[in-house]
Length: 364
Ligand code: F6R
Image 1 (cartoon, rainbow, N blue to C red):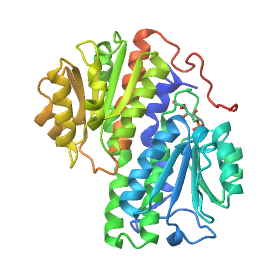
Image 2: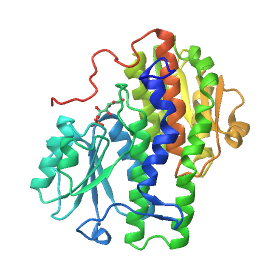
Image 3: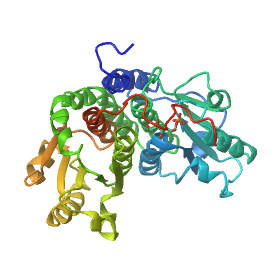
Image 4: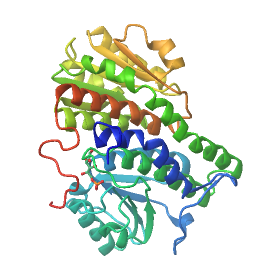
């Protein structure tokens, strides 16, 4: 049931602190300050390349995972959408690790990609929400998300649980390959453990975000900008908005703006900027100024420090708690989900069952 929520999507957004905590419990030994993925019959320290494959929102989770695995474990990650992976005849060295990410575990393209990877001698790891699904059954290394059943067609809680698992996997690989010390691992685990609480604080902005939905609802086009792990979050924000509100939206790497999309900017195009303070903040802000100089109307999502530094001149700001860069994507998922939700409600679309979409895409 939807409880006291008007839609399943809203209920599922609000459940995230709980289900992310539940998911983390399976992967983090908080007391020891260690992550622990299930045992496998191959040596994780020997993994020297990861091939990731997924579709849609699960693909964006994978993009964030790539940043983390490369950053912490220094293992190169290749990532593809499933429908491209299968037909480009990817180079897969025997014994490589292929990782598939899926809420349903039944997405036809992802499943076919998994079988292709197996036939090429890859070890198969699966991050999946439905434990009885085809992908779960075909995995060598099963990494479940514990989001519970997701009813809204637009994926929300499954996505943030995927991020939690990928963060744990990145840290586990880093340890296996001797890339982090026990002390560093303890620190990272402590940050991960703070994610549910920080997400709850992001959800506390529901009313503010609802109030600013009218800035976006009349638009024909909307741009989302981010850098680093917040670039896939920009892509995810744009996907959420287009799926449920039917407004055309694009996510862009902030630094790519000047290579084309900036030509779209005028005062009718809201630009949502995701910029937690940190090493990439100033770069993103300078891209934001370029947008503003061309009349762009900016909604800045940042923390108090970021808003104090760059909030002037924005049409609206959404203040997130200040968090470690590792957990920023989990936290910044919340405002983009809520913004899409409130815009869709304003437009009167069918939020839980958007037109032309199915919860599980079992045809190629
Ligand atoms: C977006 C959405 C889709 C799915 C995609 C993959 O909100 O729901 O983009 O993420 O169809 O589905 P799964 O994760 O079940 O493989």
